[in-house]
Amino acid sequence: MDTLFSGFSINDLFLKNRIVMSPMCQYSAREGMPNEWHKVHYASRAIGGAGLITIEMTAVSPEGRSTDKDLGLWSDKHIPKFEEIISLCKKNGAKVSVQISHAGRKAQNINIPISPSAIKFEGEMYNQPRELEIDDIKKIIDSYTQTAKRAVLAGADCIEIHGAHGYLIHQFHSRLTNKRNDKYGVIPWKFGTEVIQSVKNVIPKSMPLIMRISAIEYAVGGYDIEYVLKICEHYRNAGISIFSISSGGEGPFPTDYPGHHVPFSRVIKGNLRVPTIVAGVINSPDLADSIIRNNDADLIAIGRGMLRNPYWALDAAEILNQHIEVPDQYKRAFN
Ligand SMILES: Cc1cc2nc3c(=O)[nH]c(=O)nc-3n(C[C@H](O)[C@H](O)[C@H](O)COP(=O)(O)O)c2cc1C
Image (cartoon, rainbow, N blue to C red; front, side, top):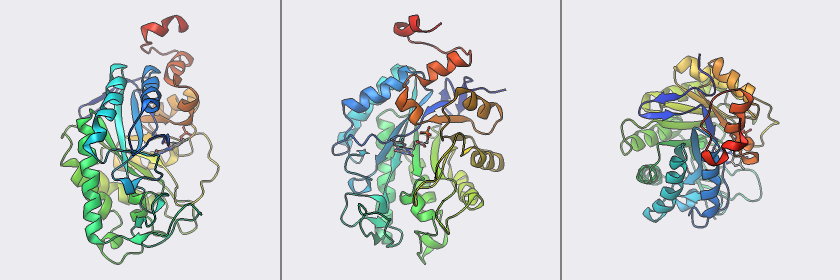
């Protein structure tokens, strides 16, 4: 039986345990460039024992940032700074994924953001978007592709495409934001599928491609898990090897509670026979371990728990009485 501390293998990727650092935007970059904060932040979680570190939402173009403090990898100039972080994490025993993203209508610092349809996101800090032309769509797909290529050059072990939380790919999925009459409207997974296919062409064949997905929407008229299951089936067939299960983003989030995404992970994993990552207030190591033992997910993403405690994984091993490699420098603090 797999546990939180079993290894995990897919294609060429091996993770020493099932603990993932969830992508968490630090809103601390200038011109998309990672800095000392990012270096210390990510390396600490690698030292802290996470099997996979996900580098936060990283914009595929300057206009694709949700704020002007987001990370970006839209030019070759960004590669060396990403390379430093990735190599530091790897030296400290973790594998690294980069979450690539375009905010679409949720780009706050853009005068005229873009979106599948010209429907504004609620809130004063958001501007009225314009509807994407076909030419724009092709360019944006290329920017995802070039960004993925740069992440690989920077040493990433895998790429996560951000298809959740009301950002651009999710805007194509949602009936609330995609009112197009062309193929990109009639087939809500067309844009995402083209992104996946194009990214697959530039990353190594053996490199797993992850997609983060909002399993349900909370707004009135939003989609449900059955709808997303169909989309995920197309994405799996196009080459997604792991789904990361989250929810919402099209409006306010309801109150969350421990393991609230687990039932959605069970549906996607069970029906599509694909590995899943699940996040959502999984602060207790016992809960994380039981989700893996019940085969409801393959990997557990820890977000705020790791902001509070970079050594979440080391502590979890002690609580669960499991073996984990502790850095020599810290051994005296652990049994
Ligand atoms: C400060 C912060 C920033 C976040 N930024 C991102 C992000 O860049 N990309 C993403 O997919 N999710 C983002 N999230 C969501 C987390 O990855 C995670 O799914 C969520 O916090 C639930 O997990 P938790 O209860 O363990 O925190 C963010 C969450 C927080 C708290």
